[in-house]
Amino acid sequence: MRGFLSIFTESAKEFTKVRSLVVTAMFVAISMVIESFSIDIAFAKLNFAFLAIAVIGMLFGPCMGLMAGFACDIVGYLVHPDGGFLPMYVLVGGLQGLIYGICLYQKANQHSILYTNNSTGKSTDITLFLRAIVARLLDVVLINLLINTKLNLHYGFIPQEAYGSAIVARIAKNMIEFAIDLPLLFVLLPIAAKAYSMIFRKGAVSRTTAS
Image (cartoon, rainbow, N blue to C red; front, side, top):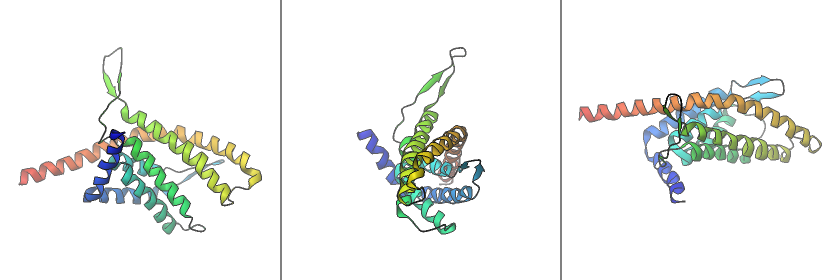
């Protein structure tokens, strides 16, 4: 439990760092851009804005992920006002950021899971990939299928008599999205982590050398 709570403690410290706030704001803006380029395929609408939230959660943890989720939903409504403003969807956006932060933030938890190739003897750290699978599964099942479907029913976006067929359609849609989303996470997350580490490590080295 102490290790789990330390994730939130470390993440809260990110609010005191200018670079964390700037990078988060940048990815919130990127999320808005991605949101504008949804892909419609038959009954499914693919949207990859969650990728930006996943990166924020990975880099800065659940506290920053929560705030970024709130910001993405609020800013998204201001940029693309479509219907009334519904605070419950803001809370859902925050929950999404919280999930990615809890699952992907590794600063306070250095345990690694290694996969060893028996033929070559080479070991590969697959921790981030397994965390990404868990995070995306929670996002799809908890938020997309359970919470969002209930909210859509509550607000009348889904008629009561069409609830069963809506669930079936959403399951099929989310299975398609999940199959597409995982490879994107597997590629993007390591690149984002490495780029962030290289940029700010070099910055720290340069400041140390200059002093």
